[in-house]
Image (cartoon, rainbow, N blue to C red; front, side, top):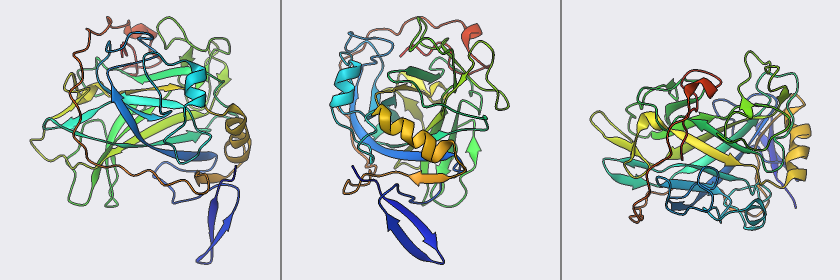
Length: 316
């Protein structure tokens, strides 16, 4: 496998077979890398919260692993191909679908992996399952967990609420995943208590293992304006219920190497792509009407969340 890198020296692009720098995002800094993934498919499934129960969740849009479904196993995800520009990122990422005035838009997701101020950050363990954001939130969530942005015209300020985007801009949502692990469990009964958020670069004693912070940005080719109605999950959730899921089914050897090459050293590797793979691009697309899903599970107590408004009661 070859991965491209592009660095600029005095205005001249040098291309080498290591990793690809395709422009620094707003949050990029030293000790980071990113992977862009196209939309794969839609389904009313959630293999973390509702494994083996097709149609039990609200509608999700899936990125990365191509075969994610209620029947998924770690092995099926690891071997089923990927929509990501980096062929070895076979991780499964998903979030609720987005609709503006009832019209669905297909997104593109960029996953950012960062040390995020910690002294050290291990690669997420193989087959770890992580969720972030609160689908039951009825008011804007904490900025540290999820927020919104208009991108494309240089403004790109973050907001707790959905902004009105100007001509030439597109809407994006960010979800930041917890980055401290208990060191023992790849999942937990509530799908969240095995992880916590670092505070000022330090992990709590209950979750002592610092891992790379995963932040995902989903960008849609839509421009909501004043009066636009934005919903999630085929209209089942308000915009305040933004959340995302991640199942670490990466090629783990690559992920560990990137941790050393890009995160544990003072380097910004930028966007990684495998030579010859197309760069994922979002397109607007109408969605098929899914089968009516079953009711979501009851919300989990907010006391389990690492911070107010984070991801308690994820549900699906």
